[in-house]
Length: 239
Figure 1 (cartoon, rainbow, N blue to C red):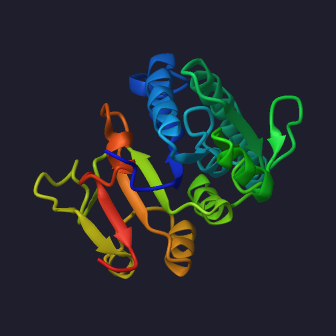
Figure 2 (cartoon, rainbow, N blue to C red; figure 1 turned 180 degrees about the vertical axis):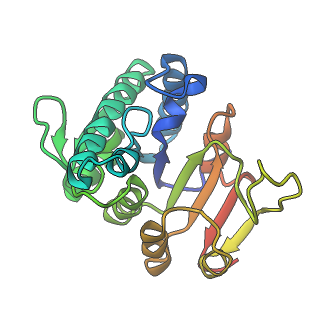
């Protein structure tokens, strides 16, 4: 089946890369994710990626323990660089060129992010991994993903998570929680559904960026997502 989307922004959580261990990088998980990314790139889907750093360092929790938020977020942003390099290497091993760009200059191992250069790499068929968050403290990688989706011209922001979509309540705590197949930005906001952090979600709503929330670690889900198959939850301007 042909891909539905020509260009996407894929948001990966750092925690997903840790696998069952809950911290660090699980090479098996990274290789599985990278193989799926390489596959959709070969099929012509121009793929930009933003990865969190929570498997290495969680800035908010350290800030709560007394570290300044600016310092904690700086360490967290460097964690995203580590994850991005690991995923880029795995994508390369899977047979697709990968480029790591960073909002903060780490010139020995990344390119400095500019939207124009990122779009050129995407057009040339490379997976573009954008590290360093927004380059500023007090902003999450969800917000970075929303911003980079707009800057690179992504048709959709695909948020790969540990759950299979958006529910009306926590499905872990409430076995009767109802999953939405499709919902508008406005309704998700009115229901206070935790699709993304509020800054990121407001940005997507204001810029009419659709969001697909789907389960990452289920083989073939990324391909299904780019083909427009019925998985996860779509959050869009119109239901």
